[in-house]
Every structure is written in C-alpha cells, then in structure tokens.
Length: 237
Image: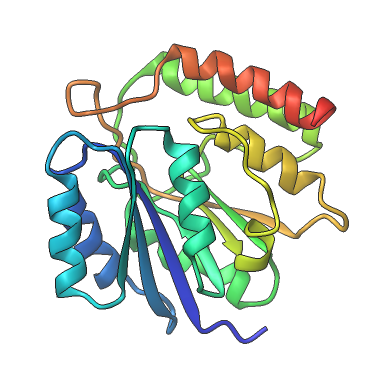
C-alpha cells in the first residue's frame, strides 16, 4: 500500500506546559517520508491549553483543533480525533513528554514495509532509555497486559502503552465506547476480534514517565476499570 500521510492524534487535558513542546517534537520527527497532519483534541482543559492550541494552529497549517466543552476522558478525546483524521496511518501521541516522537521510525517501519496493520510501542521491550519510577505501576501494567493476552490470545508485552499505530481504515472501523483510560484494553480486544485479524507488531520504545507531582493522571481506579474492560470487550461486547 502506498502510504502518503501520517495523522498524529493528540488528546489534551490541562497540558499547557508541554503541548507546544510535544508539537515541536512531532513536527521535527523523522516520519519516513510521510506528510503530516496533527489533530489536537482539547478535552475540557481548565488551564491555557486551548490558547496554546490556537496559537500552534495559526503557526502551522497542518494542525487542526477540536474541543470538548467538558472533560470526558482520554478515550472520548481519541474518539473525536480518530473521526477527524484523514491520514493513511494514525498514531496516538500523548500531549505530555512521556513518549518521544523520535521513536516514529521504529513504529512506522512495519507498516511502511507492508508487514503490519497495527503496531504497539512497548515500554518493556528494550527501548533506548526508560525513566525509573513506580514499581507497582510497572507490576500493574504487566498484570493488565497478561490478563488481556489471556483473553485475546496475543503475546503483547505492553497493552497499556500510549503508542498505538493503525492503518486509518482499521481504527475508523471500530466503535470506541470507553471515555477514559479503558480505551487501551477496549481497542486491544476489538482489534484482536476483527476478522480477519490484522497483522499486529510490537516494537521497543523509550519512555520518560511523569510523577503525579508532574501531572500524571492515571490511578488505581483506572486499573480496576481496565480489568472490567478486558472481560467486557472480550466476552460480552
């Protein structure tokens, strides 16, 4: 397939401090010859994120901005972003600086080579560097990935990763229900259930995680919800 454009979907909630920096890094990233559009979805931010978005869109014609009047969650923002995306390949990019666009070549290569339809970026598969942070978070991620794999019969190492890359027709053909972080197990389950199953690859990525003091949002309740979503979207959806 002749891929021409990459759509980078950025969900944003109270990220005024990092939004401009991540957009600069996306624009500077090696996209393997692909053109780019950036789709930013503000999910009811209460800081200056919307002002930053508008400034960025005025400076760069390839940026489109979309807004939720009230905060709904990451899944809801991604649902809007996927609907608006027009590129041949779609990648999820968080608005913070935890995930580096310098990993785009590794994420894109399996698709551009014609070997993959979906690519997951794994924080546990040997990227260049990883910030050392919370032990129990890493255990929780591995437990959730294991539980997901038991239902999907995939051998992923990081189901909860932000970096998920799709051929656009695949992601736009899936109805996303979850509004918050339940998006991760939901989309994994629904991809695994597609007939025929898409070709899924996983590549190691770097990771510079945030502390809660630095703005990290996910909590233990999201982990409980993720377990619920693993069961729901694999067995009952």
